Length: 89
Image 1: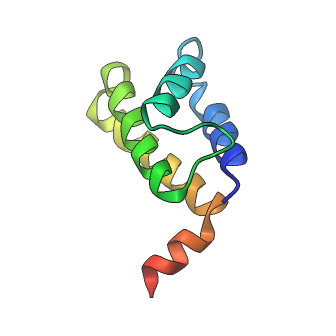
Image 2: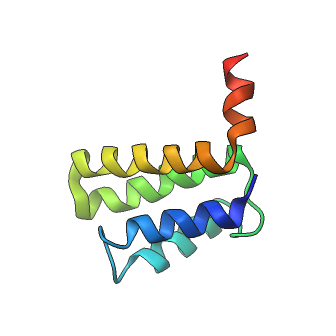
């Protein structure tokens, strides 16, 4: 998995939702997930996605949370395709 690519891509895509807070939210949720930008497994990425979307729900509401979750899952699929191939089998 290209964990750094995933986190950087997510960060860029989330900036329009919360431009000032997004870097801090991402760093805090990575730490809460016991991960870094460089060390993130697909499983830990799923935990990270849940934590980020839960944190953003305060600002975006339930519908916005779903939009962000869908976008983050799409990015995870792009940066960790092997994880999703394993799930299909």
